[in-house]
Length: 188
View 1 (cartoon, rainbow, N blue to C red):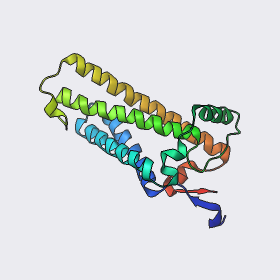
View 2: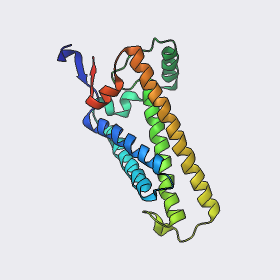
View 3: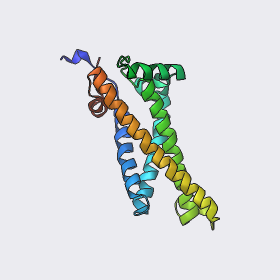
View 4: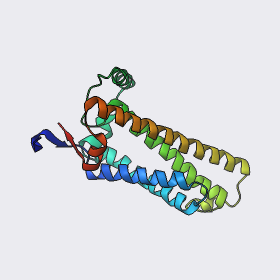
């Protein structure tokens, strides 16, 4: 296959964001209560990455921009139906389901990380919000902890769906989407 059949889709920032986010989420999820320092720093990294990606979603390269992969609910539903019948249209950038997953993952991770930062301040009187808390009613700490845990687990659920979606789309279109997220290159 010649180079004229290839196209650069994922820019270096998108690829770095993706794999750094994967790594930080795994570290945060596995360290949970046992290694609070590592857990917290992984969470801070996720929050920083999300902020960078949010900005890049407006000013980044073509396939990184939200305007390239935010679709209507109808388009998303139709794409999922087409996928189930193994006749989904191929997209160079994110397909409608993939675009929706990006938004869902970012929202879920944002809620997970912000609730974690608030929880750290409320429960441990540590972190950047520690000065807001001297003593917090345990009911609020419990609520924050449940919120944080729910969204961490919900994010894991979304990640599993995302990986399944990537594998299904890779099979349907006979292309290695994982490789393209490493190299940035896809076939035209």
